[in-house]
Image 1 (cartoon, helix red, strand yellow):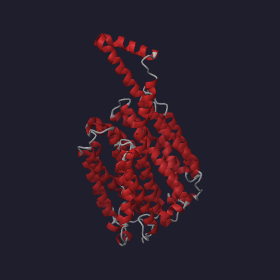
Image 2: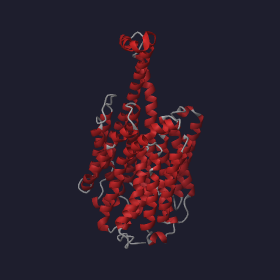
Image 3: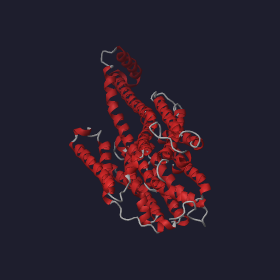
Image 4: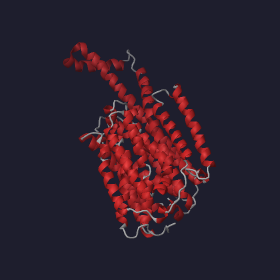
Length: 520
């Protein structure tokens, strides 16, 4: 085993290695946010609804989550450098397939493959970066890595919107091709495997555990994505899928607890901090991915923003995260991390509540401050929560725990996206019915509005058609208001979820600062 206090490569400038490994991680993170602003355009091009097009996000998170726990084994089995390059090749080729897709099923399959390729990019980047720098410079290196990963969500929506407006939504995926080629060249040139990787004997992969993990996550995702369309448990096939999910989930737990060399070490959950932290990161994933999906859709569907306009409107979230990062890095060694995490959830909750006051008359900058502040709150949650969740574990368990921790975040995000889309659809119908009750044919308000609108339209369309058009305008207004209220409901649910996380934070034990920072 190589000395962990020495850089793995002594003859190569570590900043060249940093540039090589940060680039693919940046690409992978950016690809999650770049697709969010393209959903309405993909839906129109692929003859799908917005709800169906959002599966492009959830399918990616699903396959990403499946690969995460097995990434360490693949790195030891095939060599970390070879596995890293192979993952980038898979990600890049799948990106081309996403851009070239001519149907929903094709792009969903391509996104599954792309997520599988991207699942290992961040963990591999972090491990290589840590080993490439001497101990006194690792903090700076990880700071640069963190900054790159945080900048990606800023650039993603804006770049995706610009590419969609100027060319096509397909270029939001094609843009990965030159980045992937450059990353492969840089890694091939500057990255080498340390001796302990070359001499590693990882043993056999827990194929049964890996298969059961893929099956229960896949069954869960299909239920979440198709449940609303097929009336949930009213459909027989969903009942069968749910039974499959339960059986494979129980089977996965059993095999991981009885296998001497399991895919993941579930005994890590006996640590209170890790158990509570995993639950919090699961809920955090649901909140952040849910709102990341909602806001671009609101701007495009109800306010008729272009993809670029929607991307620019939500970009302040990333700016807020960049601003908060140095402050969080300073405070995490000075302040109880539970205070920082609680503060982050509270701020995010109040921002979501402020978004719950949406109207159709807002300007592009009306939500800017709330979006920026919400981005800053994410820094106060993610970094300190990772620190306190992993900082109480033995060092030999941190690698396994990190994979589980990120798995919980991705599963939470996937469930969050599916739930917000279900609420959008169901509550839009609910609010439409409620609003219709207030528009009885004898309503003086309705009659006055139809009369006034008919008089305005009579000169253009004639007396015979003006009233029909007036009623059509009323119906369109009703549909818009029903949709608006469904977005408001979703955002208020996100706020409620964030508020519920605050007392849960205090179930965490305080950990020693230096050990926690090292593990985090």
